[in-house]
Image (tube, rainbow, N blue to C red; front, side, top):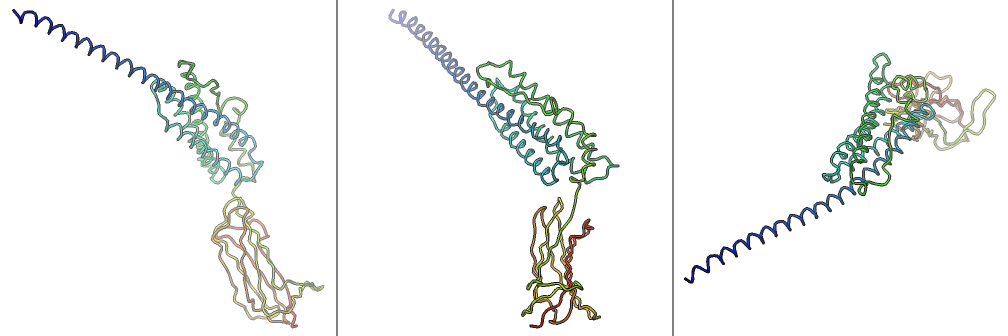
Amino acid sequence: MAYSDFAPHHRWRRRRNVVLLIVLVVIIGVVTLAVRYRTERRESIDYLAVAADMGRSHADIADELGMLLQGLGGGDRPDMELRLDTMAGNARQLADTLAEQVVPRPVSEASGLMVVAASSWADGIADVGQAINAILDGDESEGTGDANLRSAFDLIRVGDRAYARGVAAMAKLDPEIVPTEFPDVSYTEGVYAPLYDAAAIADRLRQQGTLAKLVDVKLVGLTDPEPVSESDAGIWTIPASDSLSLQVKVSNTGNVTAENITVLVTLQRVGSAETIEPVSQLIPSIDPGQSEILDFENLAAEPGAVYSLTATATVADVEDPTDDNTFSLVFQRNTQ
């Protein structure tokens, strides 16, 4: 008889334990969902803040690119290339930063569109720079640069459309997690829209002489000792000295790097058939706007005689378009 009361009691305890276990599982599930919700909410806010910063930065880059296209030919080529490289680098950094962010579930749709926008803009801006160089340096009949520029503009338009759709997707989100100001950004719409015409830009580029590839060097020479006077016959007098040297300054006045510049110095005694061996020095390269200085020492000019001294800078395989790459001097060294 003692066992008849124990079995129901035992079954009741088991049912109670099952109920407690179910309640515990439900509580854990609710807590987990709450934690996940708060985590996704926080990550969504963080992601959208980065996306908003990306949009604001691209609004500035869009203005800068529009102004560059509008003012093509107003500056020199190195400045244009530097501006395009800077814009492309900044756009690529923005795309990389966005791609590195954690993408929570609530913003997954908007995130995909924003990533497409950021990467398309970055690639498109980089391609614009390459296409412009191809137009300036290539053969117009081939049309490669023109086609590349059209593709670059189309890629930027893809970014514009993806960004607009991304902003529209955010309108479906909880307003409390979306930044109060998500900027409107479009490179190819608005005031600069007419500039995104590849054929028109290509024509303008070919008409701008300041943007054409130009290799040009300038040479200035100075003897040591310096000449002190010039005769009516155009012969300069150089004071007596233990030695005679020539210093030349070679400047790159073109808009691209000049490479393999040879400076050749010739010294010839006037009225003599004797040939003096020329001397030369090589400059590997000079960037636009930069200069190099070379010294030619112990020139074999005897005191009392009249000599013709010439220094010429030439760039390998390039015909210099100006005549400022030569220094000439007819002189006589004093004997004492």
